[in-house]
Image (cartoon, rainbow, N blue to C red):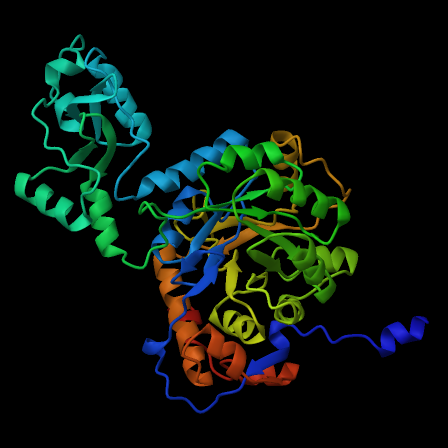
Length: 480
């Protein structure tokens, strides 16, 4: 009966409806362990960047991975562009670069110079039939004034090399001893099998908690449409995770299409978005996935709830989905996606059962987010738009033949967010706030937070009371 729908309605709690209660603690914030797992991937920092074209491209993905999280490259581009961005993340940092760009001795110096410029690299091994013959660096080509010179005329022929079993510590010692920045890796027959650079050794030492694969490369995820198996297959050789980018995953056509991708593409899957116990139950019983994106219509630039009246606020959705995951004894990661503006919302997400959070708004406006800053009224901003906004939809439909519009109405907006500086600083502050929240609750890790956290409802007036009030913040005073 219609009245029963109202009388028995769930209360869809949002982040603003609840607070976390302090508990007895023996945990200091500095002692909190925020590490988490998504499938076999271990994250030191439980943060994924959202696959939005104003949030995550290769620069953001590199920054997030170095901080111990995971970047998800958006799909609002051609397949080739997305593959290039994923490969750029993989090349950004590794101990031994396997996909080495090379030249031959007969190539012109101008060609070598062009490759270095286009690929943004400072040196190229010189090979013949796969065997190392020398190395040419930016310094070599810089002093080569004769445009007719060949690579063999300026390359270094007496090259220090190492074998594939070299350790990072030994590589560093050799580079220091010989004052070189590149170490070609060769096998017993002299074939080039990789390259070690001083930059990669430095980043490995300076970011010990970075999210890396077995070869020391930064990990990266990429968004796909469940209906675009060609994109999934193109990304398969390079990406660590695939993430379905769907507003409402609990759809038979979407689930069936995802099953095909799962069967034909050997890459772990995160699927979503979902917002109910029933959706989680269906995914857990029908698909082999490592993560669930959870939350519908909570994002700051999402208008789904306003336009359609349909929503599953992230806090409510996380609690419902986590209940299903627990019932089925699954280790699938629950990823809170939408409305996580800062560490307070993230802490509440973990208390409700999340294993990680996905950030869009919190990372938009950073130096690493795509696009250049704009100056409006003397202040710096960057563009931030929902993937359901008219401008994002129009670009996707032009570039991606699998993105046929299934709806005739936009479900997102486009706007400006303040420029926030570099993503590293933003994440550092985010993590510090999150650890402080765990400390108040008495949780030493995410598992503890799920078990120990207690919540209380708070009224709209109470929400105002627990925020700064009755004073004029110094940073908002007019300049005199």
